[in-house]
Image (cartoon, rainbow, N blue to C red; front, side):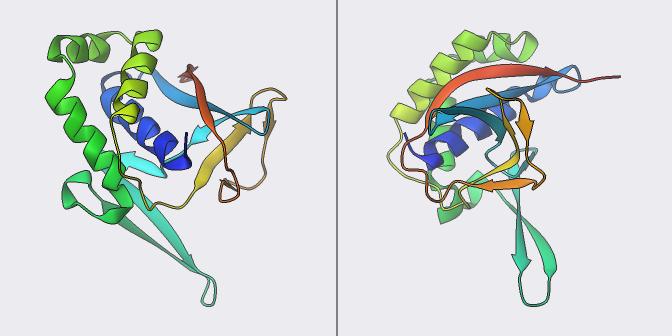
Length: 165
C-alpha cells in the first residue's frame, strides 16, 4: 500500500462517517516500520473538501486552500476516483446503515475494497497530522510527521475516539 492509498482511505472514512462526528471520531490506524500510528492523513475534511495548508519558509506565512474531489485536481486524483467508485458501486442501504451506526469491520472491508479498485494516486503532501504512536502512546510535539521516506505502509484498523463533553 502507498501513502496515497492511506490518504484516500482516511478521506472516505471521514466523509462517510460525518453523521456521527458529534458523538465520536473514527481514526485510521496504520503500521509502518513495525510501529502503529494514528492521526489525520488528509489535513482537514470540511464537507467534501480538503483544507490544505502550505508554509512559505522565507516569509513564514501560512496559507490555506480548499480543494474538492469534484475539481479533478491532481492533488486528489485517487480520492476523486474512489468517491466515484463508492457512489457507483457501494450499496446505498449499507451506506445509510453506516451513517446511523458505525460498524467498523464493515467500514474497513468496504474502504479497503474501494482502494483496491483505484489506479490513480494523490499529490497531497505525504504526512500524518496530529500523529500519535499507539504502541507506545507517544504524541509528537510537532503537529506533523513526514511520511516522504516511508516505502511500505498498511492500514491496520479503524479506532473510535470518544469526544469528551
